[in-house]
Image (cartoon, rainbow, N blue to C red; front, side):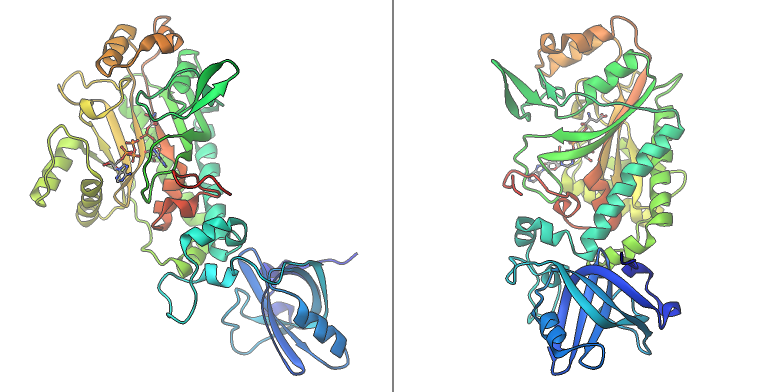
Length: 458
Ligand code: ATP
Ligand code: AMO
């Protein structure tokens, strides 16, 4: 059997070596007795040269010219070092002087999306087609083959791996919570209803209640990675109706800032890990979507809500003391923080109680505020969290204030009657972290098969 060389390893030290490669026919140009074609595998590519001569018959040449783009091919040949870099390919030092080409799986000659069009930067010469987002998403399988998408989803996997490994090293236990639930878990009407045999159920809009119940069940430190469903008709660049939540919950001994410290360290570990192991992925994405490198401080910058209100007002924005941040104010604050502290990442602690869910612990020392926080990347929220109320009477009182019927979540309320350690936690939107780390402009770019109010396919 043939032994194949990965395209990513082809370099000038292999000059003169005979190899087999497998990849997709990316582009081809055939003229007279010579042909040039590029073979692509994931985010790597190499140029191949075919000339009619002793090793290559006219018939082989004709066959090679007939292979359609995106077909999977096996190519054999001799590697030759080149004097000037092959600009269009990731492997710039060598080309493959081809002796054989075999088609392993043919693509139809007319594809609904050209990978070359999907690869182009947004601002391009008007003469070249740049595929629009809807066409790309309609044909996501082809779109996923672009070097950018190959890099984006490898980096996203790395975010999950770093989240999991960092927390496991801090004695967190990975749990799995139900996605079919009997009542809304965050309050609000933004749940999808499903038929559950003869009754109704809902898709979980957060693992919130279950991660807290795991704490009451003595797991002390838990995390979970899973789908979160939101029936919000939000057609924005950062809302999906189904996204991946990275959630955690942690018992603490004396102050919820123990949890904030852990969360700050977690993100520093993720960002450092990405910078260390994903430099080539980041630069691949930057070629199509240029962005400023992501900057962060260690330890993580922490501000309190009243300070944010002051900064916003000084910059001329309207911001009420106890109002949630609007999207424009969130963005403005991100720019102000960046200018003052040189960081794209910070924690905002002490949100107004009125702007937070019913299970949020009020700040016992400062009426109107709460022991809750959001984390921001490039001026957009990526984590929301809080210390939770663990007193059942206060929990019921707060829920009633929001018009929430606690009878529908009795086992959640009851768990605090049996004793539960003080605890805090947070929920992170995976697609937002990937989007903002890479400086991308739309969350659909970081969701493999995005779901939004207008898209249920593919
Ligand atoms: P959280 O669920 O913690 O609040 P989030 O970032 O999704 O996280 P939302 O409350 O959904 O926050 O929205 C935050 C901001 O986005 C709000 O200022 C809201 O007005 C704005 N927003 C939400 N949906 C839309 C929409 N469809 N169009 C424009 N803006 C929206
Ligand atoms: P929240 O509703 O703020 O908090 O969600 C947590 C994080 O999830 C992400 N996110 C979204 N991502 C994509 N599309 C959406 N529609 C969307 N909505 C939210 C954001 C957000 O910061 N139970 C709490 C978490 C906690 O307190 O532990 C919760 O769900 O990045």
